[in-house]
Image (cartoon, rainbow, N blue to C red; front, side, top):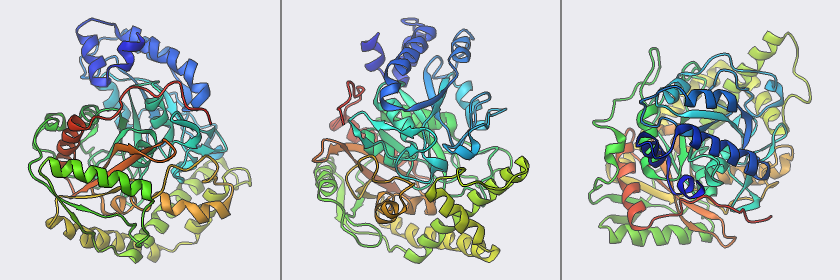
Length: 474
């Protein structure tokens, strides 16, 4: 069973279940046993619904991933009966009463949801180490971060608890954990996946949901399952011309790829990150792609205004609404230091600041977007630095956060603002033996180009898809 579970991705497991070579219950029971055995080491899964999952295995399903075990991030979606804490002590007693639309789509596809995964408080950190749940540990080295904010989902897949997991990305939170844990992570275009019932017009225009996976085809299939607007969604994007899973294995043609080895503010990336990108360039050129050193013109003031407002104001509004509902004031132990700082900044913002940020979001998309008239893709490292050790991005240590946090989302967050799709491919390792991701950004709405290229690279330079176990000690 170890060989069967570890040797197949979600698509492969679903095929074996359809062919009756193994039952859904056997797969789900094995995944549950993996969580019970391995999760105490990595601290990836923080809430469980095992009995409900086993009952669901007995219900017939014709979905494309029927019987495949899955976990969801404790942020950005809800599953009835599971906690909905966002990794925060403020919400520790909240239990979801209904499935979000995305959870319903996952269930219709046959996925069996086993529980929630660890996340930093309200997703406001590039490392998953909250006060409520504790640090999530990277199986490549237990002394290092899994990234954030979808770190629990990434660790669940990397350690072999499940073959794929739900994730969200509001500043790099799919791509950063994918890079840190050696996985494939695709952030879709704005509007590709509904956030219903969460509001997204002003509250969450930067964030989008999808998944972290071992293989490109799993990501493509999960995007087919998840995509599509819900009635009333403020951002509605054109549907793809064909299913994304059909893009897997298709030739991307000869692409014009720009490569950039500096952050938007001009800081050079770490030499290990640059080395892996240089190796990727050789692969891309051997495949017939044209690679040129070039970078967009980044409107730094617009990017800063958007991140400041959208990371703080919607969160502050949600917290205040919850406190009113509870009939109390905020307490000192409700929020971590970083989150409390962002909350207070959000409360100080004025309506005109929000209007300004909305305009700057559009300006950033316009000024960066024109670059993709001349280039099909932009390639950068996913992280500008090596994977951080646990404790470096401690949200209770504001001096460390101030010194280090910005670097870990510097290369990913601009494309949350523009709404463009971007992906991280696990294409190398740093001098500490930890994975290095390479990011590719496409024009708005062109996930198809990303999937074709990722599939091509996956074929010629396959990355490790087997779980990382036993883990490397700290």
